[in-house]
Every structure is written in C-alpha cells, then in structure tokens.
Length: 163
Image: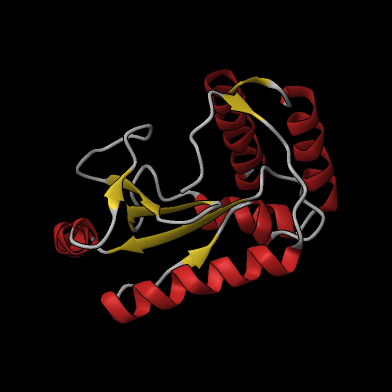
C-alpha cells in the first residue's frame, strides 16, 4: 500500500500503470458493491493536469443510501484516517502500491463538488494551467497547507463558474 506522506509531491508515472490500477479498483468495487457507481475525479481524469500519481474515485449517492453504501464500503475497504469522516462524507483507502482513494458523498451535499470541479477544469485549459501552477508552487511543501490552498482554489473556480 502506498505510504501516506505529510508532503505534497508531484510525481510522474506511466499512464498505463495508473489506468490499470484504476481499472483494478473499479473492477473490485463493481464486483463487491455492484450498485455503487464511481467516477474518476482526480488529476488523472483531466488531460494535461499534473499530480502526485494518485487515483481519486468518488461515489455521490442519494442521502437515503449513504449509510447503506458506507456500511458496504466499510466491509471491503479501510477508512482513510487522514480525511474527514461525517454523516455526509467518508473517504476510503484502496489497497494498492499507488495512492488510490474512494470518496463517498451525498448527492447535492456540501462535499459533492468533485464532478462540478472536474467539469470546470475540462472546459477551460486556463483553469488547468492555473491549477498546475498552484501544484508546482506547493510541490515539496506540507500536505496540510497544500490541501488548504487547493480547497480555496476549488471554491474560487466553482464560484467564478456560477457567476
């Protein structure tokens, strides 16, 4: 399993390796929880976006299904102790040599921003460039600080898109 780092580090890895590992995670979860629909939302899902060679998958589910899916995921994966755990969001670690995370959110809830942000990046290469610049600036710096700045960037992109 990939080690958890306190430092944000951009890494380069063969795209085929990332795709195989993404497909392995999706295949495993499709077999274990067939009615859980996952979407790839991290840097690997956007052409030209640099990242730390991690894979982020999200399932956005109706509020009435959240507890059922969380129990199902609890049965097959470990919760991510470095991420929020609440009645509207839960993160999991998929066993891998890469950093593969599964996020469970409530559709339309306060943490259901992954797809909207992904679409905002895909529709504007300038946003991808700005996000890459942010990542380069924070490369090698504390993960906690990077996550704070990243959250601010996401909010800025989403608010500018709404106006």
